[in-house]
Each structure stands twice: as structure tokens, then as C-alpha cells.
Amino acid sequence: MVGLAVTLASWAAPAWAGKLADDGYGDDPTHPLAYPFEAAAPTPRHDRGYDMTFGLRLRRVSVPKSLLDVWFFDDDDQDWAYIEPRPRIRGTALGLEYGLRGPTSNGQFYAEWVDAAVGDGYWDDVEQPAEHLDGEYLAPSAALGLVTLGANYAYEAHLVRTSETGGRFGASLLAGGGLGAGVLVGRLDRWGPDAQGNPSYKRYLDGVPADSDKRVPRVYPLVDVNVALRADLGSRVLWQVEGGLHTMLYYGTTLSVVL
Image (cartoon, rainbow, N blue to C red; front, side):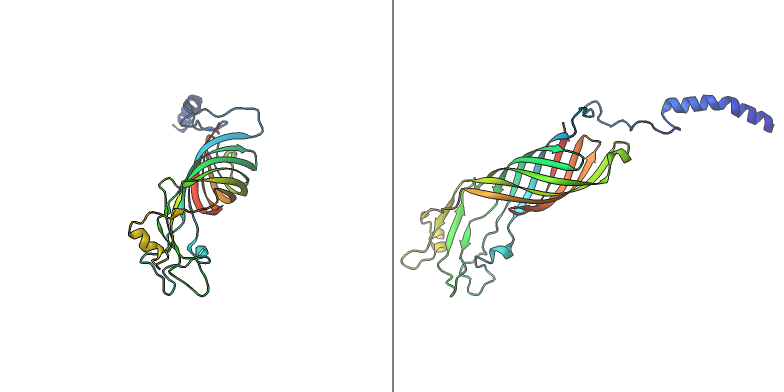
């Protein structure tokens, strides 16, 4: 009986092996597994030494309260005059990014709109001795924001290479920086104290027309210092979570496709 079983097994084994090979099981893979969206997003093929990417970026920017405290009083200061605290400076940056990606070097070029989510409020500059009734009341227009252009460089340190996962996944850390410029759009209406001693916030609440448009610079330099964690999905999609300095502090994300 044992001899018969061995004979049958040796006779049937080639058939099983052939079927397993036909089904794609049982032997070592020689090619990466097919990407689920191969038909819709075929693997980019070119003879360049770098990839081109195009993506959408979203960032939340802000100026720390502690930094503004250097120049302006707030409601935690003694004898603060207004009923509400000083407004916060923050905003949402939405933009497009074009990238050039080499083995370890990345060039990133962006254009974005920074929507200034700054409410109206009382601004009282720090002075000695303190005078809490001489501050300005500022009210931004609905379209206040920045139109920006800039370029960054980032060094990429690979944690997991796609060649190690059959082309399915990669992960890396990026660090770098760059420069840009932003043009201010919109206006800041300004109220000041009057000759009768009425503070600016009272004149605003009384419905008095604004004294003027606050004269602020229209062009601002942008300094970028960036750190990011990037995921490479099948060498077709790059998704990164990032943070750092975009003149203001920021955190955000970028989603790009490889062209």
C-alpha cells in the first residue's frame, strides 16, 4: 500500500505543480503583484532620471499667541480695555504643487491661496507706560488673504523602498526648505480713538464709518522649513503628512500623482 501511494503521488505531482503554477501560487514571484488600478493608472514609464508629480496641498497656518504677545497686549494683561481677547492670526492654505523627484532629491514648486481666518478685533500695541485706550480696531474684508508662489528643495531619506515590497508600498522622510512670495488681497478697515477720548472699539460698535484702510505691506516674503513623512503607493500616488514653517507655523498634507 505504501508503495502504491508513493507511485500515485509521484505521478500526480507534476499535474498539481502545473496547476499551481498556472494559478500563480506555489512558486517564487518574479514580478510585482498587479496594482489594483493598473487599467486606470498604468505604471509611468520613461527614460528620465527623475519622476514628475502633480498634486494638491492643504495646510493650516498660524502665528503663535506667545509671539504676538511681544508686540501687542491681550486680555491676560492687567487693565486690558476691551471685552474680547485679541484676534488670532491663522488661515487655511490650499494650492497646487508640481514636483521633480529624483532618487534622494526633490524639487517642489507651488501656487496657493491662503485664506486669512482673522476676525475683527482690538489691537493695542505694547508700550511703557501702558496705555490701553489708544489701540486700533481692525476689521478684515471677506476676501482677505494671500496669493503665493514659491519653490522648495527636500532631501528624501528612504525608510522602505518599493523594490523591497514588490512595487506596492514605500515610505520615506523628507526635510528641506525654500523661498516664495505672497501678495496680499483684500483690505483691513481701521478705527482709531477720536479727539474726545472715545476708544476705537467704541466707535466701531457705535457704527461710525472706518477712518481708513490700514496701510500694510502688499508683498510678503515666504520662508519655508519643512519636515514630512511620505507614503509611496505603487509608484503612482504620493501622500505626505508635513509640518514646519511657511513664514507662519503650519501642519498639513499633500496628495500627488506620478506623471
